[in-house]
Length: 135
Image 1: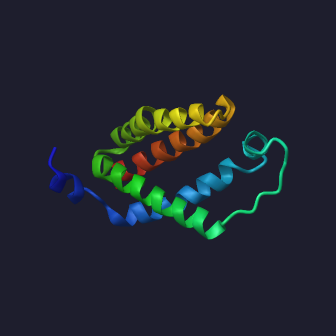
Image 2: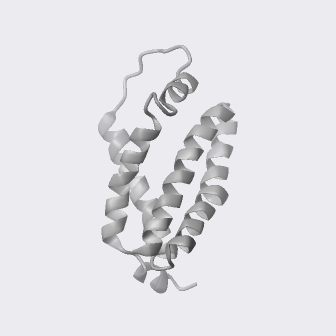
């Protein structure tokens, strides 16, 4: 595997569009109609008011999603929708899920919270892989 070949596969426009779209998926995923209530309950069971640094959270998330989708673009772009979807599933199930699970186990977070958070990334990267594959 040659790094030059991988980086030449990156399609920047869909990476940027999918990075923005990742926030749409995250917003919908965390609405009360889907998993928002359970996610809030699992993260803050005592409903303690928490001060957040929104620019850091949203900016940092954008950078991290951009990096992850760029990496997925290296292996999925131009492979076809079906193969791109499989690449996205592979990345999310075999890399992201175990990394999150290890962190959640050490942090003593619930399996329910892991399922909600990992589920979003599985859907996100499957979708991104599909789009990158057909782009």
